Length: 231
Image (tube, rainbow, N blue to C red; front, side, top):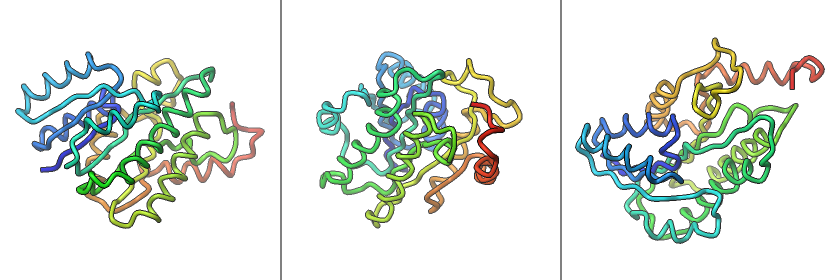
């Protein structure tokens, strides 16, 4: 049994993951911007699985409030998982995209790694995106995920006692992507992504594609001349 901190627990993937973790009797701390929705999820989890579950309000865009949030988080954490993210098309809120997908997570991780009170952390897991692999048609979303992936790789080299994992899902059918025309043959559902994340918690791999074929698809994508790729 471990104690997990799930950041972005209101997301489709985040909630599916909390259900898996709860079914295994792990202790949970769920944090998200919408605390009222989170409280409803907490009630469901506690009633169904009879687990210890706490909730905290946390806004990834409020960078100045990170220290206050950290002071309210249990220091005996074992695993931190970021399932938060922000995507929009067309892109209008460029600053928001960068903060939620890169600046916020990287700052939070920095503060955790530099806080001597968190002595029991074994893993930090972040959901990035296959967009981080794009070498052409890079928008703000892809750029922010690319920066996050680079940051996670660098932290892996520096922090030898904590496993830092970069998980890159492909297309996922979520509330965030419901209005976008995703290829149905390449699109996964949140429950599958959550199941695979849980599986990879047991692994020592650092960079993980879900499904795994996306690693090869992105290599092929980067070989295609830009002229033939739809914006």
